[in-house]
Structure formats: C-alpha cells, structure tokens
Image 1: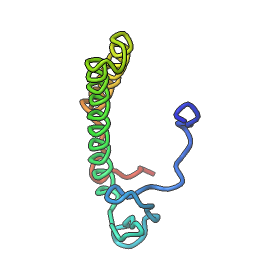
Image 2: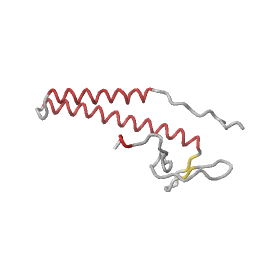
Image 3: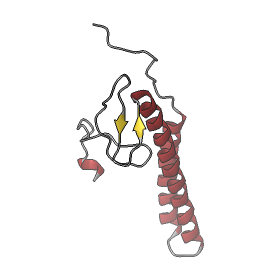
Image 4: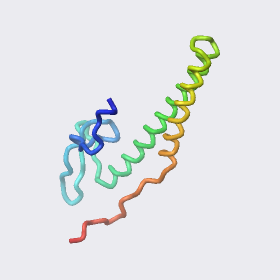
Length: 120
C-alpha cells in the first residue's frame, strides 16, 4: 500500500485533529474557522498547533507499537515459537524502525510566525 502512495498527491480535505472527521473550508469573519461535522471549530493557527500535537501523539503510538513488536519477537523466541535467527532479524528491523520514529519525534517542526501574511 505505501509503495503506491504518491507523496505529491494532495489530500481531498483536511481532517479534524480532535475527531478525525472532515473539516469544511475556512469561513467566517473576522476570524475564519474550519469546522468539522461534529462541530469542532478551529482557526488556522489553532489547527496548525493541533496538527502538530496530533502528529506527535500518533508518532509516539507508532513507536510504542514498533517496540512492542520487538518484544513480542523476543518472547516468541524464548518460548520456541520462532527461531532465534528469525527473532534476531525481526527485532533488529523493529528497533531500526523505532530509531527512525524517535528521530522524527526528536526533530523540531518549523512554525508559522504570528501575523505571517504574503507580501504583495
């Protein structure tokens, strides 16, 4: 599935970082807001911040799962369900992927400066 994913392809819509539902386009004055079908309402600065929080949460969850995969392989090897060589290979793969996730979690994201508007 991931091999077929085109990174340059734009998503159909934005999703609500609170519930995952589709966000409608920004509307309203004086401060445009994105609103999802549940009713969560966010300005673009709040949406940007909430997205980063959600990304961190999801990367942490992925890191936990990957580390648990390594532990499961250890346990399976200990009980004789899989061979030691297979376990070592799977554990090494999981830990290498965990390290990549940790790097992503450790990196700093660029922010949008307050009041940033295109200059005409």
